[in-house]
Length: 235
Image (cartoon, one colour):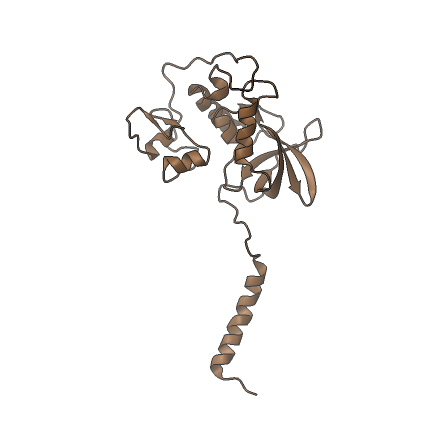
């Protein structure tokens, strides 16, 4: 039986669409634009502490040390806070992305990675930027050490968490206070901020960003300082 021309057109269109539909899994995650293309997609299995997580990749469980950072150890000030922050940024069971540097494993046999969460937040940098961890060069891995050190300078200038001279509820001895510079050098010499730009401060805070200070953080100019205190996106 010969099909009408309209029916033939419908069949032909379906044949063209079918391969495309089959090639894209339903619910497939879209890689955030800020995540490097060479980063591997993994799942978070367990949060060990502020700079250590377990991931699942191709059915195998791997212990991962976050590169270029050092979070407080158990029993030290800010240990619980830093661990909770990492758990918030990398929810167990959720997708994340990992990127290696020159040396894949540390002397203990743990994997060493830079990590982005499913939303595209660079977790290593975020922990340092907001005072949950320090910047530490783990040679020969040095791909992001300069920007992470710049993030640390911002956290120190703002006396955030581990740089506050105070202890959280984790116990331990208080760290040596870091003097606040009387004339801090603006970090926005290039005219552009390092952090992602959001529509509101609430969105920035939800993604782990803020606060920003006038004359110090270029991101300050992105948001409205309603109370005129020189700080936006306070937490």
